[in-house]
Length: 507
Image (cartoon, rainbow, N blue to C red; front, side, top):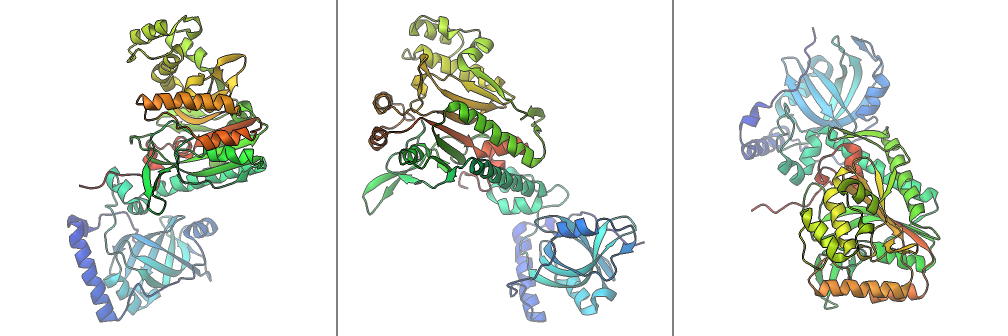
């Protein structure tokens, strides 16, 4: 009976990694000296098939059958090796799949077989020429005819019984995480599909992709603390953008019609499972549209992403979430009434609202308005209960400095936020296009900033000037791509969907 490969621990892993590194460097030097072979000399390998293609094409082979007359040319990394006398097995993986390799002295020749036994280690990259067959035990395998050592791994792979689980190492050394955990590679493939789907939906609607500055003299478009840098030649402070909004709306003034941008934003804030200082967002603006059009677009994008990944029903951290449209829609006032029992419309004064807030455990400074209390009640007692996709409408003007007022209820704006699993995923509104109103709101934000609110919006005089040239009725939307990816891939932390998340430097 032909011996089968299984995952097993590399006995060298009982040694410290640096000792293994030292041994493998010594082995590399001996390989160059004794064999005259440099494994890093190859600058190309003509791979004809990926492992996924081989598995798909030859997966129907029956047990103990060879694909006679077939020769495949592939390549990948050796994840395990099990050596015997005149035959050895290995598991090879590439970016698409894995397959078992069978090295036999009679098939490769004595010289090549002994080279494999003496010089090849787990982690090494091999180019392989072989014939597919299925073993008696039913595993699709490549019988190796010849091979080339394309690259030598000097550091050992993570211990294969358990894979790489240490999140500190996984995030700092994502390349090791991707090698050790195929499911991580799959997460980032899904992320790429999600981003592609965003673009496909937007471009179906005639939306042009643009790029706006990452460095700016002002950090506007959101209420957040920016990162500050200094430009030596100009002698001025510049800010990493916290949002793309104000530049994109300038483009609508400039008559580009429908524009979007997918890119990085930066906020000098805390790090937790939902926040990374550097994150990816999509913002889109359509002339002659409003926030209701943006709701329809948001729903269309998320449903398309779920479809692209295979199902509108996903499980996130043990909870089933349905992206089947239509999503629930409710006002902030109604949700606070439902979950807190507080009808802010029946509250007669700011003082009464503060008493209600204090009775429910909010920290009260004495400056809060009843609309500020409404927002705090929502954030503290409602958000976490919005598990299924829910559009929250009717945000107060005082927390929406860039949104158009609702003319039937002028204390509120034509705005929504989408919540999933208690977390904000999207934010959108009918854009404020009245330059006089915008100037007043920026002035109020400036007052808050002078009183110590570091996240209050800056006063952007050039943006007001742009509005004075005339911004048509416009709908705008921002969606956090990292969070969408988290929910659609069942990833607990935002760091699981960012290839290289921000980490505290090692001490």
